[in-house]
Length: 354
Length: 248
Image 1: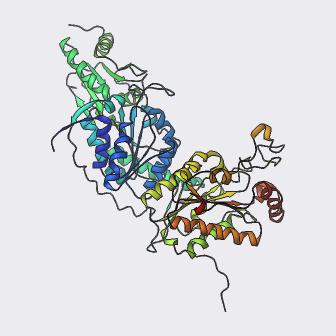
Image 2 (image 1 turned 180 degrees about the vertical axis):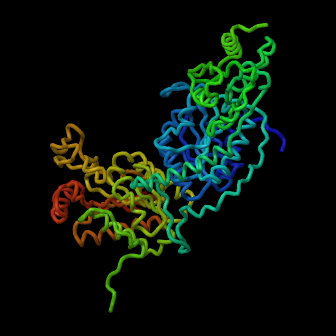
Image 3 (image 1 turned 90 degrees about the vertical axis):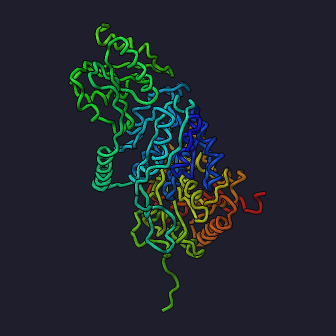
């Protein structure tokens, strides 16, 4: 298929339909509105259903219902809207229900602003709701990567019976880039024999539940979830390692910031500073193994984020004290400029201009 | 020997956890019997709430899921939109539906979602131990209203059926009670009617069932029935509030 120029949000929506999405429940919030608008136009054409809910809370619970019914379903929102959905996300994870969630994140806290932000790292990767649970979190750095991750997300969600989140910041959602919509990678998920369809007189009744009052019963459920999360951590890690050989400093960045980091690496090369980049594509599971073989030349690993430093926690776990971990970030909807990052790198390396 | 009465096949043999004298058991039976008589048990999907009846899925022999507190109408919306040809119902108490879930029930009615809600109004929070509900009567003692409900402090009891009846998409709204055999028969009729309306695709159907909670009311089952009759029915009058032909 030839490439077409698409806005990130519309590309998310088109890719979701490519991935088999037939049901969408959402609530308006900037900067993701093109996703529900696209779905309201396109889903009826394929025999699916778009419904605007009365709130984010209702939307995620409609997702829960449609997932119980065995459908491929998604919702999208932006940071404070995702915060409202966390109750439902915890329920979905608890009941092992597949769904896809898109967060076109903006700056916070509170209602914050509508410019891009990455301060949703914690609420995405640390289980934004209650209890021990995880959702798979993918962070695309381009519209092309966004469509591939989104189209594949439904297969992955069904395969693991788990919610999958695509965390694209407002910049990814709002910019236009040429994209090619590809067929999803098929995962061979088991048939949804657990779904609520009415027994049809063919089987005993199915129950989908979250409550377990006996501590031993609940622990057993949690151990089963943990075993699944362990497999995901083993098999689903994705990252890009760029220019690491001989690097004095390794930048760690995801999404929009990772693209700025690549420009910074070129700028630093012009100053005779060798820099590399580790770009997590999966935020959970985090690519800890990408940090296993840091080059002997590396003096610092620096997390660069549109936040006051959230991913840096995982970077510190990954580096485990071998070299200093530094940080540069902007918030409020500000995007770090290459100049600012170069300046910070020079400060860290002691002004190592040749 | 002639069998004159038997348990609906819509109910499992599982022993129910409800307190002695609690009317959930009666209402479970009415729902199962109505679905059985309509021959749709195999095509029905139910949603249980958060509250005492969260475990309803253990007692109904039909496909069911639990919903987060108050969210059953949103969950039922998702289920029904995927399976418009199946019978979908929510079973919710007054804490769940009339307090934390007001937005979800109003908007399900507002959209005219073609499912049925069975609303258990016993004027108190049961599962959490007798706290005040929006439906708690003026002067009624609750663990969070130790001197009785004071409307100056926390308002008058909420009449959910009257409120929902004003909504265009709610095509059938009826309030019934399970305090006497005669009223139980009327309740059964209303529950069946609600499912019939769903089967005909007419829109949102709602049955409020005045119920008892002897444990948290601090009364024996017999006195609870009397208390319901003397105190709840005057404030929450029984009868139909809306029928399909009246829904424009």
